[in-house]
Amino acid sequence: MSLRNILLGLLAKPASGYDLKRQFNQSLRHFWAAELAQIYPTLQKLEKDGMLEATRQPPTQGPPRKVYRRKARAKKEIRQWLSQGPQFRQDRISYLAQIYFLSELEDTAQARDFMLELRDAVATQLKSLRDIEKNWKKDDPRYPDELPDDDFYPQLTLQLGLERLAAT
Image (cartoon, rainbow, N blue to C red; front, side, top):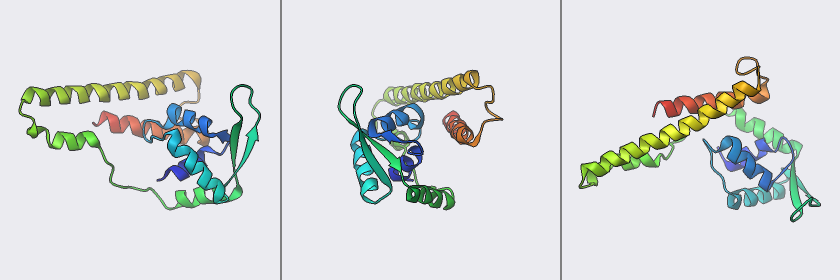
């Protein structure tokens, strides 16, 4: 999976780089991180590759916004990416590498503190996802079984994230 594919997917609706960053923070941050310093160069490359067109919008406040729209080629690329099937790659889970070497600490109390901190961090993330789920249930009576595809797959992503964290 690449940032390129994710941005093309998010651009089903026109958006600025800042809007895309906000979407990352609101819905994707639990499984994919991207900073503006990564988003803008990728958008420029997608525009150069003929996948996007950009227009400048006059500001309501602040500087002018560059709004990106997906071209037909972009939708074709997304469909091709999705048709390749699930992409599994070896994730880098930093805390697992740290746990592997905890015996390097001279003080077992430090190792215990590390594990307690990890437990708390996982609990915080789990609570965050459960809050999203709770709000979704409250706001949409169709949740989870009668959601349209545009909401079903994000909901499925949420459920898989919850299961993965709960297993940690």
